[in-house]
Amino acid sequence: MMRRLFNVPTCHQRRWSPPASMAGFQVHGKPASRTWVEREEGHATRARLRRGMACLSSQQPGLHGRISSGSCRRSMSKMIPRKAALKLTPKARELFKKLIAATSAEGIMLKYELSTKEALRMAFKFDLIKDSKVEITEQDEGVSLEVMEDGSPKPPSESWDDNLPKLYIHHDAFMKVLGGTIDVDFNKETGDLKPILLDREGHEMDPNA
Image 1 (cartoon, one colour):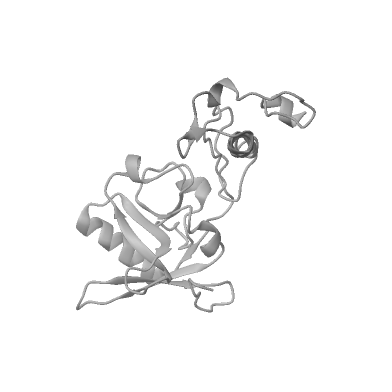
Image 2 (cartoon, helix red, strand yellow):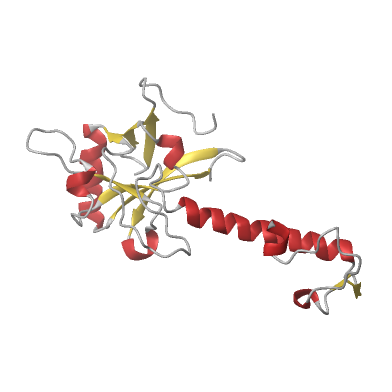
């Protein structure tokens, strides 16, 4: 049924001719063979299936607490998480707010990517957000830098749409830091700001673990 749905040739067909989508294709100067075309159509079919599954899964609240739209219709409103994905130490919270005020940034992005200092190593890093409409996607989740009157962190239910600068967790870093605590190490001489991620037990996370 799946093969017929995507017009992929089946083993029951006695005759075979290249589909219109493959007409004129050549491989190394020769007409595309049946095996090559079937393989390419198989790749295309799997890609369409992945996109279809992404659309279906986007209609369920994910770990991000948001609706990932992709190419699907945005038929559901965003789901607001009950609590922030990441905790901030008072030191980190205060330093982030000062840095944003000094640079007129619209927030700070926490990323998880290849290190620029160590070959073939991953690292956590910060980037200042200059244009939130361009640099922030639906898959990036914000963590408020504000606190309530009692000193507790401002929850997502209060901060989700307050339009205040936040610490944003890049979607590539989300699962790595989920449930942890972030602290910072600021070098006054070089101006370097190093993220320190702590797990639920208070141990420093190794970005390469």
